[in-house]
Length: 110
Picture: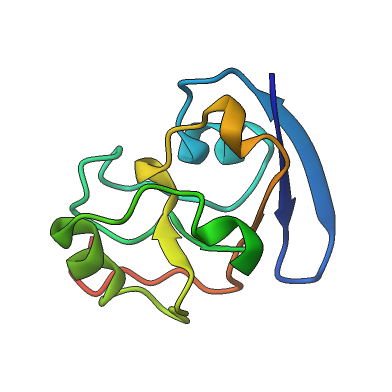
């Protein structure tokens, strides 16, 4: 199992576990995080935007151009922002910490 800690906009920490191979979006939704995922992981929206803790960011595979394009439309983007639908959990990510922004915005109007 892979341990993940979600940090809410209010600073509350929600710890959960997932199986390797699961997407962070699904795990977050199951943990009650407000990650909408309107496009169901097709990289056609930015409603699953999370901010990865800086010490974990470089352990993720780099974002592809399509993901970067969608992040340009997300609210509150930082250098360590990612779309949670694009993060596949692996044993190497055991202990991952991600922050859930207080605002989700999809500039494409979905």
